[in-house]
Length: 195
Image (cartoon, rainbow, N blue to C red; front, side, top):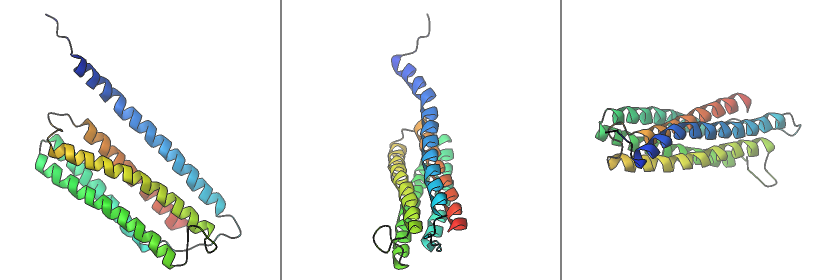
């Protein structure tokens, strides 16, 4: 008697084959978008009315938080693969709180810019501060999406959905989080050396 796969098994295999390439394609498109924004920043920096300023200290804090969160999400994935569900769940919750801390720190960075007299729009706005805020805000929008992914991952982990090697969603979510982490580090270093 032949061993035939069920339709669910075939669909699961097809999803696994398509999921990571689709994620990579979306990350490449996001990279291209940010490359365009950074290019606009570089071109605009040659304007006569360009004003340099120091980065808000809150952006340094947010950078530290997102680096730590990348470590915790990776450790959570490793724990899930070893079926250490309680440890994985705790690490995911920590990652979620670090991600929220990143967002709060970024918002504090916007407040620091306003306190320094640097605005996004209006008569007192500068092209340099406006460009910085556009790029940081665009990254924050992606972080909000990643936080939703982290919430879903945490709920699925708490419900025991990542078991018996079935960690595809967990892997995809952690890859996306690592990507946003790396993207932020690159953006931060770019701003640090170019403001």
